[in-house]
Amino acid sequence: MKTLKLDEPKSLSQRILLRLRQAIIDGEFALGAAISEEMVAQSFGVSRTPVREAMGQLQAQGLVVIRPQVGSFVFTPSADDITALCTFRIILEPKAAELAYRHDRAGTVAAMGAAIARMEQAVAAKDNVAYGRADTAMHEALFTHCGNHYLLESYQLVSGRVAALRTNLSSPIDVVTQASFAEHRTLVQLFERGELNSFEKLMTTHIANSGVTYARVLHIA
Image 1 (cartoon, one colour):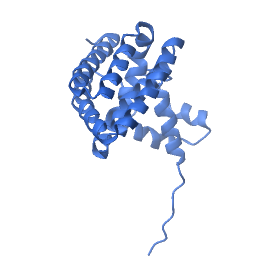
Image 2 (cartoon, helix red, strand yellow; image 1 turned 180 degrees about the vertical axis):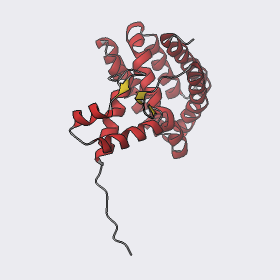
Image 3 (cartoon, one colour; image 1 turned 135 degrees about the horizontal axis):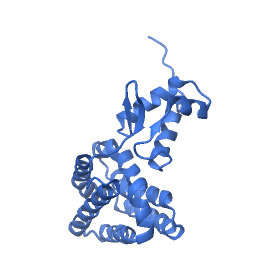
């Protein structure tokens, strides 16, 4: 039998992947921006090989588009992409909420409540990156507490793109208008009270409105 060896907790390419992923989500790289493998390699003080591996994984997550002989770029959604993404979320998120309420209501409420508190702080500070991160945490709580790993894995297919769109497109508006924050707070209250039909209606409207915002900011409506 061959000797089995445990990998390091995180390989170099994985660490690069996680840092680049967060940079894209936080808007350090704008949507559509070019990402130079050479620049990234020099910045991290590594060879281009682990950077290339990380970029390949980011492409698989839909966060990067690699064009052979041209370069690597942060994704830019089309109007059809935004519509499909919002439809996907409208189907999944209310079901995740229903399962989370049954499986771990207290844990979900605690996680969502903590996210709301961070969102409130971000609104006060007009910090769109912090707001985007907290917004993402609130929505993801439904999946991490739903008790169904297949549903969680399905959401993770798009979670990076959703988070990046939030921070780049809607969060700068949300920290100023506060309408989105009010909706999030209502969503948590509806969930806590078990009013899941009302929750689903508001979540559907909330997601659809986010799609309209994305398209408007990108001028592709």
